[in-house]
Amino acid sequence: MRKFERTSGKPIYQQLADWIREEIQSGNVPQGKDLGTHAEVASHHGVKPNIAERALNQLQTEGWILRNRDDIRKVTRPREAAGVLLKWDPADLRLEAEGPLEVKVLSKMTTSLSADLLKIFEVHGVDGTRASRIVKLHLSGKTPLALETITAPMNDLPGLVMKDHRLTNLYAIIRNHYAIEVESVEQRIHQRMLKPEEANNLGATPNFPALCLDRIVRAGTHAIAMAEWVIPAGRCLVREEGFRL
View 1 (cartoon, rainbow, N blue to C red):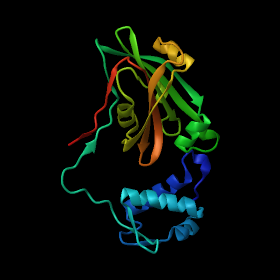
View 2: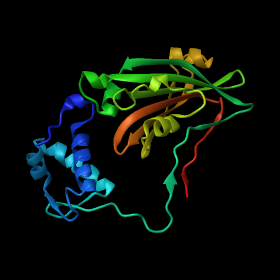
View 3: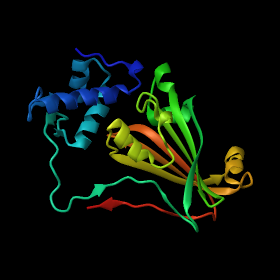
View 4: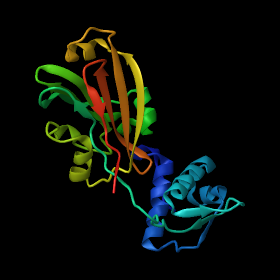
């Protein structure tokens, strides 16, 4: 029996989901096979029932299994959508202002994840607490428009601080340097006051109102990076693109 350890830096439910998906893709678990209930799957793999249920729910969302009224999970395969296929093409925010845009990297470092970020990335143990942190300042001429702070667990994106962040965006780096396809981005939008360090970098006064966008980047359902954008009120327009054919 394969063991699933918390010390790997990846949540146990994600490890279990990855293992079952690999078994289906390799043909070791044939299409149409009954996996049983989540309790039976938990017993078979030596994990808690809630862990098994979360893993199976993820696979069901991805289209790898079906669930009947008796909670029996049956292996299937994702089907391609009929009609127009829309592909999401992740891109940075587009800041619209007078004059050419410029990006300055203010700092690149490794750091420990805060309690809030540990929850977002769902990492456990000592190995999962270290992360890359890159702070970028976006300007138009000499006017600072926005701060972008990128955070990513080192287990998911090792060596991220060594990449050149001036002329490309986070999504291109993930795709080109790590061969990982970004499947979704969860965006949280809120307004808050600038912190003193942010105000200093942006040439504003502390407690000045700003738009804050937290963009959590996921491969599958697993968060691998987060980009926090802080934009002082009135500095520029913000535009972002959605789907393409």
